[in-house]
Image 1 (spheres, rainbow, N blue to C red):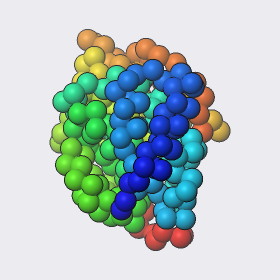
Image 2 (image 1 turned 180 degrees about the vertical axis):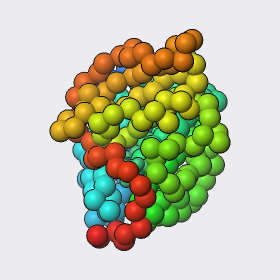
Image 3 (image 1 turned 90 degrees about the horizontal axis):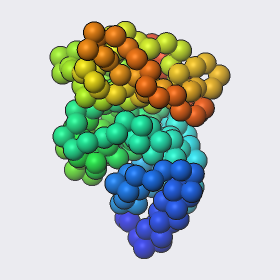
Length: 220
Ligand code: SAH
C-alpha cells in the first residue's frame, strides 16, 4: 500500500468537490483528506478512487460515494469518544472516517467474505478504534449498548426496533429510509424512550439492508 503525492493531490480536489456540495465541517473534510481511499478499493479501480462515486467491492456491494459518507457523518455530529454502532461495514471506509474523528466504532457486516477482507485491511492500517462483527445488523450489538450514535449504511424499509432500543437517550440514529431511493433521516430517543425524527435530509441510493448473514464468495 502506497500513498503518493498524486493521491494526495486528487484527495484535495475530492475535498473541494464535497465542500461545494455543501459539507462544511472541517474535521470531516480533514479526515477525508487524510484517509487514502484507494486502499479500500480493488486495484482495478485504483485510478478512480478519488472520483466522488460509489464503486463495486465484490459480493454485489459498494463502497459509498465520499459525499454520502461525509453527509451521513455530518448528520451524526460525531464527537470524540462517541460510541458508534455502524451497520454495513462494507469496505470499511466509513468506519475508518469515524475512527479518525476519535469515535469508538462497532461495525457489523453480514457478508462473511467482505467481513474478513475488510478486517484484514483495518488491521493493517492499525485502526484499533474499529471493532468488527460478522452478524446480522438487524440485531445490532445489545451486549455493548447503549450507543451514542447509530449509522446504517444500507437502504432500510423500516427502522429496526432492536437498533432503536440500543440508542442512548438523546443519541442520534442516522438511517437512509425508503425502497427505490432513500431519504436520510436522523432520529433521536427522547426522555420517554420514544423515537423522534429530528432531521429529514436529501435522497440517496443505497444497496438494500438485508436480513440474515451470507457466506457466499466474492463473485457470487
Ligand atoms: N459503510 C460501507 C458501505 C457499504 S454498502 C462503506 O463505507 O464502504 C452497505 C453494506 O451493508 C454492504 O456491505 C452490505 O453487505 C451491508 N449490509 C446489508 N444488510 C446488512 C445487515 N443486515 N447487517 C449487516 N450488514 C448489512
